[in-house]
Length: 145
Image 1: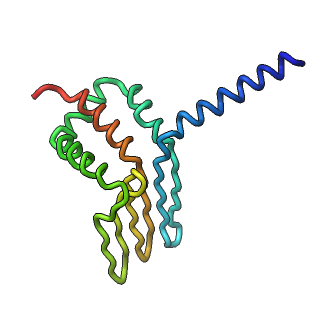
Image 2: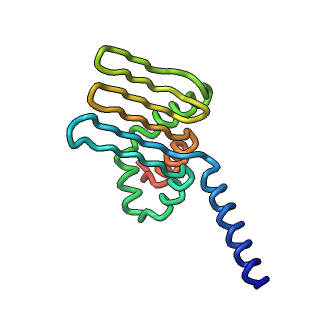
Image 3: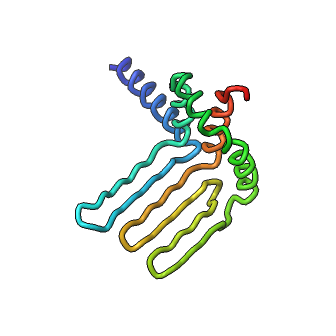
């Protein structure tokens, strides 16, 4: 019985540590709500640390293909990320009209995009560190020009 309790404690501790490690960077959150008949309601939360880990499992030919398509945007993205990190809590775009409200900002080191319209709401939240990790991995697979 004591052996079973020790095994359960070890397994429980491992799960807690794995969860803490995975959630250390926060979550990527995507929420989409359509307010029409038959509209979709998508709410997806993914541990931010999981994205760069999973990218290591993508076959090289697919990473090279993605890098080729992103080649022109990568230096711009790198520069934008560098500047966004200087402003951990700032509103960059806010547009309000009678039909919708759009806001792009950084909040606690995360890029947050909110679009609230008459027929749908879209909210995206992603840690800047995750965007930086993804950009780095794409740059590593970019073929020499």
